[in-house]
Length: 197
Image (tube, rainbow, N blue to C red; front, side):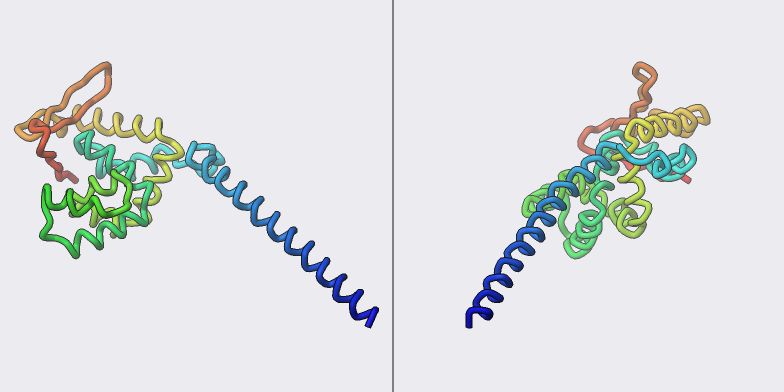
């Protein structure tokens, strides 16, 4: 009986030590993983993981001429790819909701405000969802290389402006302030989404 009692106490002690080690490992992972995520979010990626100028140009070309207000929402929403997919499905199920009714219904959703904003542009939201790999790459580029992303938008706008494809119209104003090309709607309540090749 004494040997069994000793063995039981020894096993209990071993289980307690193992439990403490496992808890320590879990705590260490919980502390380390957010730091890694923050490093990625701050753009502290390995240079080999960064996107080249050509890749940035390719991913930004379809949206570079959009009005600034819409472009900024798309860039921020692309950092939430799962929410983009959820929002696209939700918008398709609730396609009758427009304007204020849509805003009211979106209050119940726990998505990022940028994702909610893009819900007002169902065709853009659908494209972002259908091309989720490209959307995710855009989000990663925006998080890791924000200055380069915004610089490439300006380069693409400058080329389009030089070729006469980006100019003031009845729907939008194109301004140049301190060398920065700004695209804004003529009517602040109506954002015109240009279509171009």
